[in-house]
Image 1 (cartoon, rainbow, N blue to C red):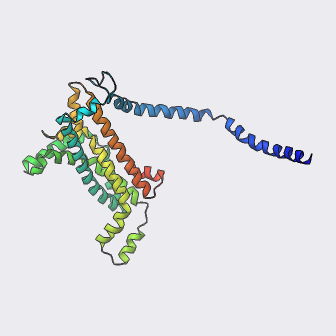
Image 2: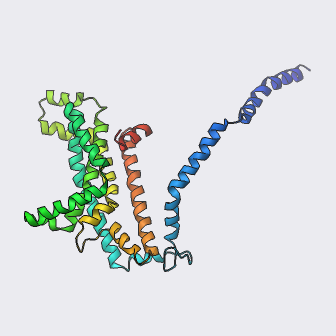
Length: 305
């Protein structure tokens, strides 16, 4: 009898605890949370629906991109059979790599200077970088074309007659501003005590820069390099103006292909380049995460905030 009464009391004590989670689970979510969730899904669909469509149509076996005949990998195989496509992709990759190197070198030096030598000049310089960032690409393209012709033909600097050089310099303009923002955002929140300590220990300025300052900024430098590479891959407007015969990049090739009708291999190469961009962005996040940054800090660094 005593055991039965004890078990009954224990069951009564445990019953409210077991019922509590059910009651909590039954609580209705506010209508505003549901509305914002639905709105977020709709925005994501609006942003990514065209990309999803082009990925699907890259597996189209039809002759034209808009004419679906069936699912297959014929478009990807066609890439290996068309030298024009291979040349355009190769030019784009080489140009993006060189532009990323130029932007990383210039942007890293500018970002370190702004972070370690603050003053009124920084705000003027940031204003110039902002001007570069917001200037329409068509304006940059129209300005770059006569400038390149002047350097290459009027001044006789033959290197500016080369198509790869023209494309690399033109693509590095916006990317340099992006790298500057990222490196500055990385260093501006870090104390300069390590660099001062290196100077107190009689290290040369070059040694301090190489072993301390650059080491602290390295995650942002790598992130800036990868972002500059991805930004330079699709610099269509500037590429269309400054290119020369024999060095047609992929975006310009796609524009010329529109006149005769887009074919599935265009979507196939676009899908490959999209995957390459996603891999680069994933590497950016991985580099910053391994450097100890939180998700908020990674987003702040990548946006230059």
